Image 1 (spheres, helix red, strand yellow):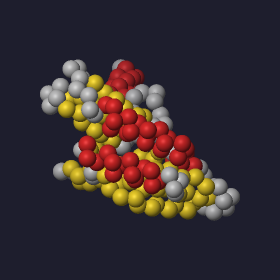
Image 2 (tube, helix red, strand yellow; image 1 turned 45 degrees about the vertical axis):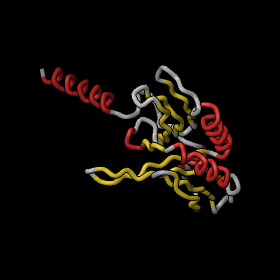
Image 3 (tube, one colour; image 1 turned 135 degrees about the vertical axis):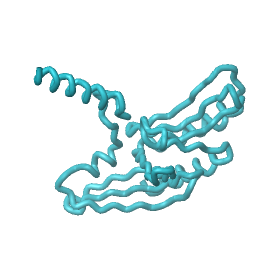
Image 4 (cartoon, helix red, strand yellow; image 1 turned 60 degrees about the vertical axis):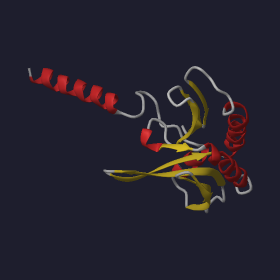
Amino acid sequence: MKSLSIFTISVFLIVSQQAFSQIAPGEKKNLSNAEKFELKSGLLLKKEYKSLGMVGACEIKVSKLEDLITKEKTSGVRFEYINHSSVGNSTKIAVIDPDEVKSLLKSFEIIQLQILPQTVEDYTEVSFKSRSGFEAGCFWSTDKKDWSIYLQIEKYDSRSLVFLKKEDLPKLKELLTESLKYI
């Protein structure tokens, strides 16, 4: 009887953990190459963050990392968003690697010039996803009959969703272009 109770409680805990987890069962949190570098052990790690500016409520920074022992370096573009809620504030962070910045820029170029001018009938999504789980794009709202532009800083976390205005796209593209000078 006692072993049946322990088994039942164990199954309940496993099922509950999977049901309430933000990351799907069996899925690992995706990391950018810069984030993987930062997690290595045995480093004397120097971190520099150069702020490029704000787009909506999101701050764009260049992240430079260097192992002072081996002199190995890496960098990325860092998106930071502070979520304000009744429970408190939490900072949401995503880093995209240098090789992804040009693709993200091209994606916003296509969204701005080809997608946003369109009117569609059905709900439609257009999105860019980085290896770290960062997502950016737009979707057609059938209620508002307009496109909504967004940045999803952390995968599976609705509190990391940042909505942008169409007028924010030129500034975002400018900051991403500027980041190419530093990464």
